[in-house]
Image 1 (cartoon, each protein chain N blue to C red):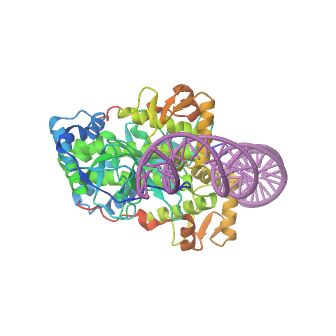
Image 2 (cartoon, chains in turn green, orange, brown, cyan):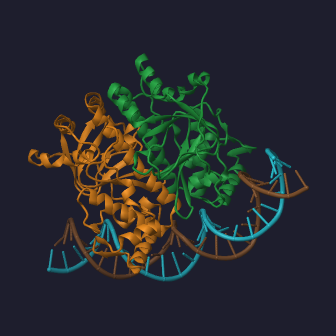
Length: 264
Length: 264
DNA sequence: CGTCAGGTTGAGGATGATCAACGAATGTGG
DNA sequence: CCACATTCGTTGATCATCCTCAACCTGACG
């Protein structure tokens, strides 16, 4: 925890989603996989089946809790959440942001006692995928299994990129990097415009994601504004010079995309 | 790069392994998977088949180079290597150590232009696994596909744990954490004793893994020695008080193990 | 109108980086 | 076999980055 009390308490309060919403809701995951491979009708149906049983959780709710045993993963279909670990003395490291289409609980829930927690930032719609069902999918639809493996690799790459950022970049570069990562990830699910978006995180959360203190994040944001690289009006952030900011942050969004899985 | 010149240059120099060695060589990967599920004879055979074509690479050789396009992964069967990214100005972040049984090139090689490099520390024996063959395995042996997905999740967890370490721990804690991680990982492949092992990394490499400078790593090691937590004789490191060091580093090796995959 | 979460700012201090040596061990070529 | 280069470890002085602490401000909301 950076410094302030977390405000991320509360227990999962699961409200069943209205059926009328469901159609549009489980599309994020399918859309994401469809970027990796061309899906057959049968495969789409299987993914549909996989995502039975949506639920809604309100903002600021812990939907995965470290230390418990889980028998499956979640798929996030709407809203955003953060994955994090809290050390015993309260220090917190945020591992990353989960956006629609992401697996929630990966990789923490693969362990006997779940390693990481996940809390919603806004109201989310998610669905539970028991391992049993996931493994059945690997059996019945090997191409989907392969795609899910590939997806896990991409999640993994988010962690490693984040690690480089935190391990070897200055505070200024880290903040720049983080804002750019948010831009491209939010763009990929239609939550950001060409060069702007509504910041889903407070400065406290950014601090915990980047291994910095709250005041220092604030100062770096001010500096980025003074350098005419970003602008903030309320909670809406605009990146004024994406190429310049990318150069500072050593960020290359293009490298992190991969269109189709080869040989599949 | 922490400061010194890297000494990790050179191009892959692939020497075919003698057939007589092969039998024992591809066991590391099989052993690792066997910890996740009970392998049938057919599955063992398939894994054997997957690992055709071993090669040997000498110490300090780059066996995966960032920026290139790869059509598969490698499986490391003997020796150790490091995965890392070098920024344009030379700063380097080491993402982790690869030990026998690990996928080399994951997750970097899943991208159009490989994101990370891998260099050997000692002479290694590895084999190339084209995606084509890997995906065929997902098709023919779904349980193995599932296990490989699971394995990818565990690799992922190494990255996230490392991220917590670098993001939210002091230099002293980071070094302590790293030494413990090395202990349990090397133990898992029989390269470490009860509480000691030969350090496979120089202080420069530790610095680049932990986001620290070389002199500071040196000072932290000295401090750990002064605190009677570790001892170093030559390159052999002994952890004098594993529980105490674990408490300092907030390290819980047990949490990172998972015996069998549930519901498989 | 009071409370609270979140943002902003500054002063002072600590952690860890940088720079610059030096030492020990190993290997290499003459 | 020795001179030399090279790599790695070690140490100290100085300095910068970033943290900590402590305010204060704003807007939202009851």
